[in-house]
Image 1: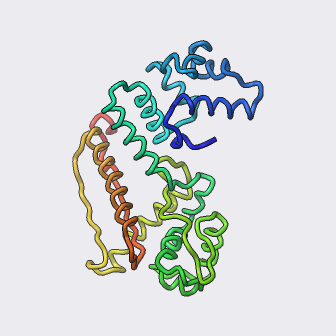
Image 2: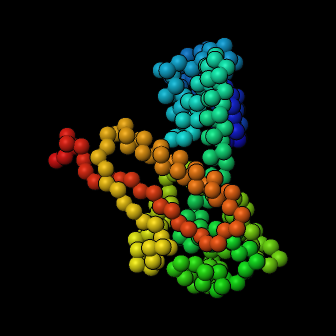
Image 3: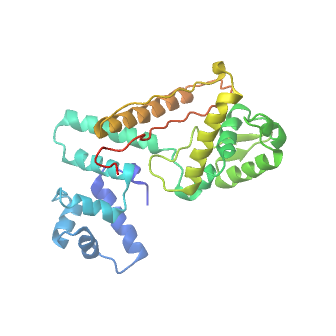
Length: 274
């Protein structure tokens, strides 16, 4: 079954999801699905055939049945708004939002390949081969990384990237299989948590390893409401996308850079304090 981001009709997604359920379990029926969603069987059938919409009370249960989380849920809710919208101008705006979602998720890594993030230099090497596609010697590649990585570790990284399909062997070196890769906002993986810790540690070490003209490290402590915290995280997401746009337009990259974003609480709410 295609990713939810391939759909612009939520009913089509529901029908395909139910079809997949039936393929795996021939005894599974629309009635079973309706029971899972907590709605009458007839109502569920009318939702599928387009004669009835999804009400506010049924929506959370349908999302749970579909197993949607985070951005997938947001995308599904957007599909619902798109279907319900009768104003052509607003419908076009929502369609643009759907397109933005699909563009953002196009290069996301499947969870079964999250071992790509087990070591920081796996990611660094993936980016490095874009700059030096004609170098295949592990020792030479490792010497170009900051900090330097041994030839044996680089060879291991190359094997991981080749086996996962993230890079491909060429006559003289390697080529990346895409412009960029991302986990998206939804992930639950010890490998990614370890990767983020490694990059945070490298960021701290960069204070001593690089002069100020070769790095940009700054901090900001602020007091925010929960609403404005969400606004800040939205700004950071938009900044990430803007940086990706800059990378996509790059014609002569010279180095691999790591850009970290961190926002975390330094206090509790007064009522949460013990």
